[in-house]
Picture 1 (spheres, rainbow, N blue to C red):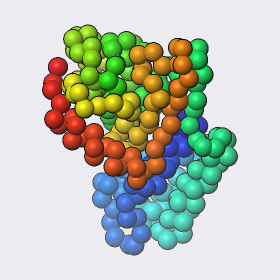
Picture 2: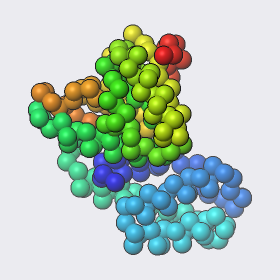
Picture 3: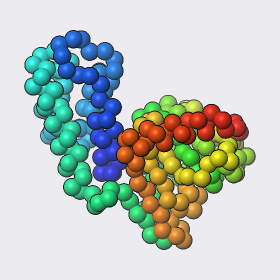
Length: 232
């Protein structure tokens, strides 16, 4: 997994941590969060994952929870610091003119990192979005597309894509959108400097994440736009 994508997943994980202290029994929220944390740490560093999983097992078994809680969060902060050191400041990716394939790979990997859902907002999105960026999605993911033009082409492609990839695809049209953003799993928000249609072909562009607090506000704004948009 790309270091920038992994970093944002860790940041989102940290910002969405449920209550894990005390001696009470855990519920599904805690179990699900710890499961995601274990998977991310294993992706980041398999050797770190060994002690991390021991700590997680101790927490879920209500054994020495205070100490294991410290190990879990220290490891997550360690992963974030390590990944930040690998990336230039500010974190993000820039793509010069002619770097269309590099942009394609970066956005495709971002889409494929989704565990549950993707919302792609792009006024000029066309049918090539499915082959170019969404075909790497795992089955069972929910895909929402918000666009302003090329509605007929996208509608036909969406129907065929959903049938073949066994996922739910919904597309809507709105004249209220100007930004180009991708929301991953309803938590991460990535800003695209140009449309997916022709990014980095002739002009430079970028792909960069928003901080968790700004992303949450952005998600709320686009949920309102989505609910008011016209199904195609």
